[in-house]
Amino acid sequence: MTEVDTAQDEQTPYARVGGGKAVSVVVDRFYQLVLADPQLAPYFDSTEMANLKRHQVQLISHLLGGPVEYSGRELRDAHAGLDISSGDYALVTQHLVAALTEAGVPDDIIASLGGTLVAVEPDIVSRES
Ligand code: HEM
Image 1 (cartoon, rainbow, N blue to C red):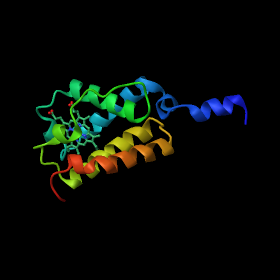
Image 2: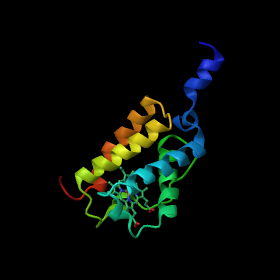
Image 3: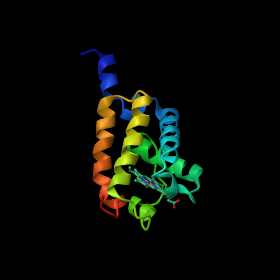
């Protein structure tokens, strides 16, 4: 294996997707899709979207191995009382995967984020169906 190959193997997913700029593009598109979805939009009626996007960019960047700290609330606290169903959760996940796919994020990175989404579902969903 050449040195160049080794360097590429060691790149974080964050670097591979194109860093913070690329994550911001994904997050903007993600919330565009979420807010255009009549089943989901009402949840965000009183949400300060700039703040939410900033925290989502931090969280995803961190999950991708970027040099970024997440400064938002714990996911359980952020979603407490929102009465989010498992169906809503599936829809939000679909929109995130669509935004990642559109941005050309490699499949292995999407799959690994998908694993995290499955893991945090119990912190976010408070209602069946
Ligand atoms: C798919 C996995 C999800 C992740 C990773 C996620 C992540 C986050 C993050 C990082 C925040 C910001 C917390 C803060 O600013 O302190 C947040 C807030 C929020 N999330 Fe989620 N979320 C997810 C799913 C959902 C779902 C399914 C819904 C509703 C259908 C939802 C609705 C909201 C709302 C309304 C807020 C803002 C709450 C407020 O304004 O106080 N989220 N989420």
